[in-house]
Image (cartoon, rainbow, N blue to C red; front, side):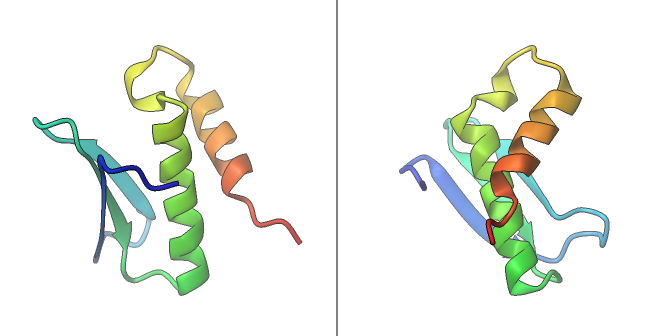
Length: 79
């Protein structure tokens, strides 16, 4: 799921940061994925961030730990 209002960029981030999403003044979701991660880790990080966007985690007052758990669970690979 990548909507028209999502822009994904791969840039080097600190090792402990997998990805981050920032909403700009035009309403676009800018997803920054750590380019230092492996392909599989980048894929999981992107799925995690897209879950936050899909579930509107950036603009609600839900518990942050629960939002992170939900996004992590949805991004977990199915074997």
